[in-house]
Length: 374
Image 1: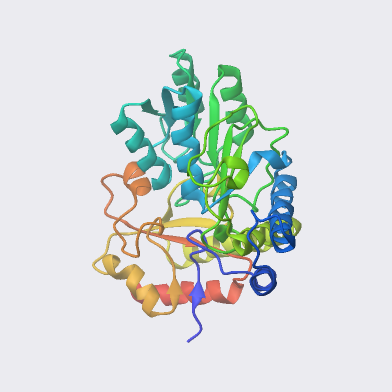
Image 2: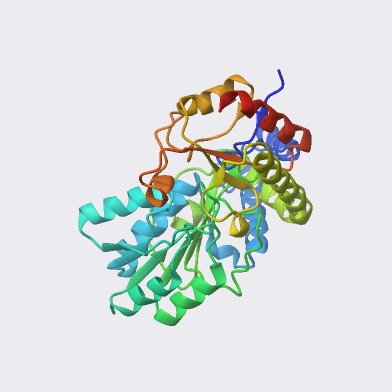
């Protein structure tokens, strides 16, 4: 049975072109980038070319891009180092952030190095910008605002430029988790003021275990990982050369093919919405599908005796989807996002997330197979 993968918010398949670029490096470039001989210089050149690719995609300086092990490390670095090194004593975030942000904030609160406040969320899951303005105006403390560009479970989009302007006017730093949107939406850091931004390769058809953090030149922080002088003294440890090359190639392809991919994915999502509403009128959608990432759809099914087995039955029928975030374990333990928006609901949620590799025929098959599971 050919499986249907509709969990592209959790991860994406490695693009064959990216795999080719990585295997070429694995086979031919074994030098340590910190070495000064020919092999080392060749490895260093690969990393710096990759850094230039990322910087060009974001319209920022190459000196503002640092490679990491992924989005989790990038987010931890931005949050914890802004407190440790930049004098931040107050962080404003939201209860719907990814766990790597929320758990980092928990650690900061436990250490009592900064206070944490949560902005209000409206009924559809959007950040209430007036409440953000109110919170920023309520204190003269040095403040960092940490809000994600697109929610990984319901897909809601943050008005990035507007939030950046609000933070700039208030004199606050702004960290944005763009793990879900990197490569899918244009981001111009020359036009949009951010202090920190994070990305992860495996969300845009690159390899797992590699990501990056953008740190504005205005914010000078100390290393997060101590060791050698790698990443311009910002992250100790010999660089993951083929992972970094894979990240850059994947981002290059994502930017070049962005409009074509987006059009195809939007068509798939729209077809899924029309089909599932026509076939199962009692379904609803979490969040705000009309103002959300085009690849994410959180579907709410009516309470039923079969509901607890829905994800398992989808899997048994060759369909991969998610009950929420898939980053912590393979067990569906419920979603903090859905729990916040619908705390007393007995309905069952499945997140379907689409790729340009998916087809209309796959969507139709999923809709047809759902009938026996509800």
